[in-house]
Image: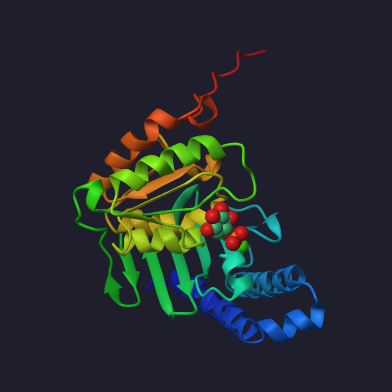
Length: 275
Ligand code: IPD
Ligand code: CA
Ligand code: CA
């Protein structure tokens, strides 16, 4: 394992143990604090602090883009961190959540870890070296027809601007797939696409830390990732489709009729004229 990936794994496992310890005392802590949100902020922050501490001890000069503490540092190496993906699930004791850590080098995703502390599933990927679940090499599913596919998604839950086109997409996917699942942790959904447990996934309104590690995993498992039109720029737009090569194209065709101008790939800005 690459030493940088190794450090990320150590950080993800440490965060996972903080999360699991807190999950054991969820009820007690809730009664004690009378605010689940405070508790979660506490757990999110404690997990993030532990991750950053481990990464910075190993690589003091690297930059960070983390959900709770934001962006810091200036380096061609940027660690992209979601200390607890699936917060709502965690809050309710619904056991689907994970830690996600990716490393971007000069804007290219080079390593990723997604750790599911409930199942003790460790997903890892390094650019050009494949994706793994524990020691097993991952490949995306071999299913060829969308109608046979199990598709993951995330419902809009904070911003509802795109709720109508989203529901249109969902109505079509209901009829054109074997089933739709909304597990509640986008990073884990992408890892499950890489593992072939889901044939595809789509969501609108994600952040880079929800996607970065999972995107590398899907690509390294032989899948495709794009925005709602199959183009790049998904890490910036937060609109993502991922799947096996066959399923990906069929998903893009289902989504297409529902695209509003705001959901389309932004045209590249014209270079400004010299002053
Ligand atoms: C959320 C989860 C969820 C997705 C949301 C994300 P959080 O992350 O990944 O599945 O639908 O868009 O924001 O807030 O639990 O870290
Ligand atoms: Ca998240
Ligand atoms: Ca989070």
